[in-house]
Length: 109
Image (cartoon, rainbow, N blue to C red; front, side, top):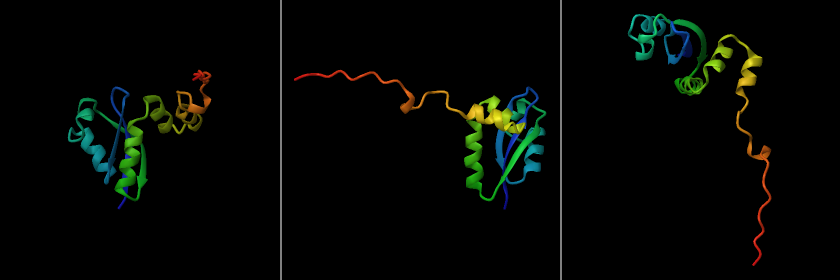
């Protein structure tokens, strides 16, 4: 059975990320007030992106990943902006090997 991860655009231009087995029914539920509390307050919602997975575990893993993404990164994914997505995926903090290290103080016995 297929499992879906989806992104909804809410009335206030925010995004909602979710997972479901029946994508069409879940979107209907969000729009009729039977979905998540967040989407209830931000209706109407529009399906703007979805991915399909073979297992629920894979779908939930991807859902959790997308929920941690910034609004800009989700927007790049929704618009299939691969360059923007690549740029936004770069780490903002320097890697350990890239940091400038101070010389250690040598303590003599």
